[in-house]
Length: 115
Image (tube, rainbow, N blue to C red; front, side, top):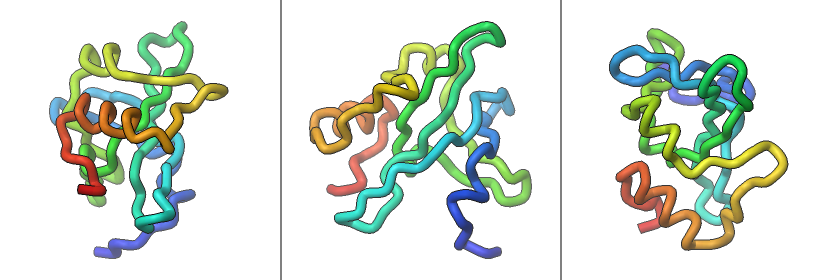
């Protein structure tokens, strides 16, 4: 298996949970240039067909890529995502603020990648 893919090839990839419920698609990736790591996957979640799109910064280690199905598996329910700290396209979180990053990792119950 090739473990190297361009980020552009993953944009638009679907995200499902372990129940195979559609949670959304990959919108973008946030890179931490100080560590050279992908810090967050930006998940685009549509709550209902007539609702606005909501974006979520999800720590990469909270998801697994399934190359056979070409999707990301994210062990969250749709209801839990409705409570997640999200943002819209025009107002992204301040990822330079350590408190913002700590709260994202805490919400998804994954340890910070920098520790």
